Image (tube, rainbow, N blue to C red):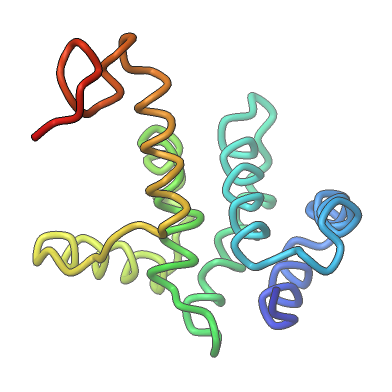
Length: 156
């Protein structure tokens, strides 16, 4: 975890995110990474947007923090801000969030769309790929773990 991303998030979100952050520190200790922090921020932001008691100021502060992180040295905005936060939001949440996005977040979404159209967005992290494979394997009908035939034989 970079102190820079932590400082940006804590500065913008203050007490709203502090309990969540302290829980993460307690759970992960020195193993807390930016990836974990940003994943948690995605959940936090999604909950804030979907809450029937949604507070505009909380959502605005989340977006301001993400907007600043887009230009923070050491943070890859495509991989972290989009890949770990915006890209993990449901289409409904992202649509509701649109009016809160600053110019850097809008530019990031445009950049990601262009990279995707050009096929240059890149591959998901190995761990994400592995998790998706495992989920597909578990959800597939018996003997069809996404590969092979009905009898579980490997595909040729």
